[in-house]
Image (cartoon, rainbow, N blue to C red):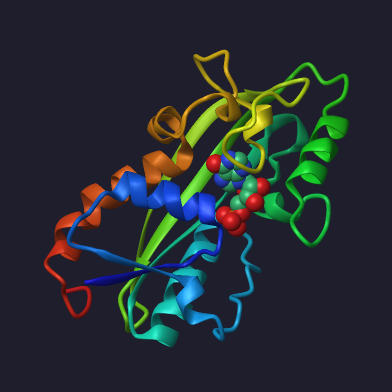
Length: 202
Ligand code: IMP
C-alpha cells in the first residue's frame, strides 16, 4: 500500500523510513504533491499539530498519511520552545539561529535539563486518526558539538550519555530519540494493519 509521509524534511523522512522498515509499504513523500497547500501548524500541542497534518493531507490526497510533530522542551525556559521549536528565532526555520538563541537564553543557567517530544499520527483516507508518542530526556550543552542530524542535535545530550545527538550515528540516535520511540510504537501499533492494506480504520 501507499503511505504518505507528511513532511518535506529529508532528514526526518529518512529517519522515519529507517525506523519503520516495512517492505510492504510504498512510501510517498510530500514532494510528490508539489501543488498541495501547506498545512498551517497552529495547534497548541504536538498532538494537535500531528493530527491536523495527517488528517488534512490524507483527505486531500486520498492516501493513508503518517505525520509527526516534534520539538524541544527546556525546563528552565518553562518548556519553551515546545511547539515553536522550528521557528524559535523567527521564520523561516533556521537551525543555526535557533541554536544560538537557545544558548543565549540559557547563559548562566544551572538547570540545563530538557526533553525532545514527538507525536506520530496515522490517518486513514477519510481523516480518522490515531496517535502514539515518544519522549527523550536529556540536557543542553554549553556549546554546539557534532555535525550529524539536524535542528537542536548539536546541543542535546540524551540522559545516560556524554555525546550529543549530532555526535552519534543515525542508528544510535534512532534507538534513543523521541521520534525513534514514537515510530517504534507506531510500527508495533499499526504495522500489521498497514501491511494488510486496509481501506480505512476498522
Ligand atoms: P516539526 O518539523 O514541526 O516537527 O518541527 C520540529 C522542530 O523541532 C525542528 O525544526 C527542530 O528544530 C526540532 N526537532 C524535532 N526533532 C528534532 C531532532 O530529532 N533533532 C533536533 N531537533 C529536532
